[in-house]
Image 1 (spheres, protein in one colour):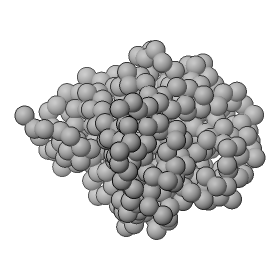
Image 2 (cartoon, rainbow, N blue to C red):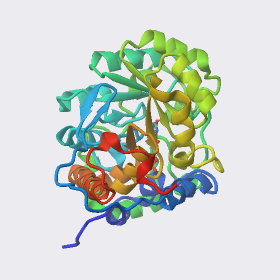
Image 3 (cartoon, rainbow, N blue to C red):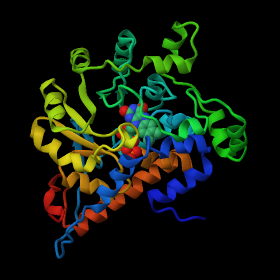
Image 4 (spheres, rainbow, N blue to C red):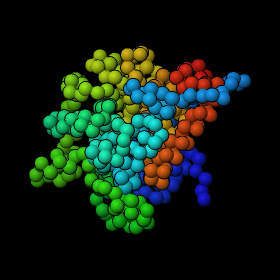
Length: 377
Ligand SMILES: Cc1cc2nc3c(=O)[nH]c(=O)nc-3n(C[C@H](O)[C@H](O)[C@H](O)COP(=O)(O)O)c2cc1C
């Protein structure tokens, strides 16, 4: 049996088990993937200070994120089409997060619906919102999240238009997925994946079916494309803030100026994010943007971080630069693609252990004390 002890191992297995069009949808970034690789190289470049002869026999990784207790400072982030990476992917990931004691955030463009996930879990989960042209439908989604007892709404703001991942059209990835001959042949060599998806609850966007059935004469793909709204502004954030009574996170902030405005409009948290290098290409890495945003908002708002997090070391670096918690995208998706729900759990275990060891070797006993002192200047 293969020994799996890194996110890279899970990625390699996922690459073998998931059809190429889906694997590359997860793995790749927009345009020339400059931002995608910068997210990683800038994280890798940070150096820890090794500290010695400190009693590290009792450590705490426990964090409070948006008022909720979390066993470690990590959130399973919103990613579209999890249910096509593995059948019922959203439910598997939500359950793994629940068992681990960390938050799970469901995407607007998930395969399993808000209600499916609600039914399959006991712990309240977060919901991520894309603002669509049909503001009525957008607000219906907000209300559905409230009805499902979601305590946190995460509004994503870095996708007024979609960046092009060049591999997707080349792989024949359509929304919803279209079966080409090449894809069909590929699927024949991925029987585990095919079985899991074929026996999953759904294969279309679970949260959006009602809106689609209300429209006539347009395909689902045309409908979805036409729904992403390039005219989203700060006014929409105000409207969502006014409607949503729970905690509100704004995801996709890179500039201190925007961060200050998010705080002024009453958000409880923001995510420093460039959508995992899937949107603006040639932008800064998220880890390089993090300190400026943290300094700009101070303690008026929690700052979460994502982009390139593949290990506990990466999580500790983000904490050291002021993040309240990291958000994982691809790392847990590799686990999901490799081994389903067990793979997500394994990804969380690997990252948790790496975090614990890195804390010990930098002399950090409580994750809440992690600060810039852990890194070389
Ligand atoms: C396959 C995939 C789908 C994604 N879908 C969404 C989404 O539906 N909503 C959203 O806000 N962010 C989405 N993201 C962005 C992630 O939430 C997160 O910002 C990003 O993955 C972090 O970078 P990392 O993958 O390097 O960890 C997606 C990312 C991936 C990889």
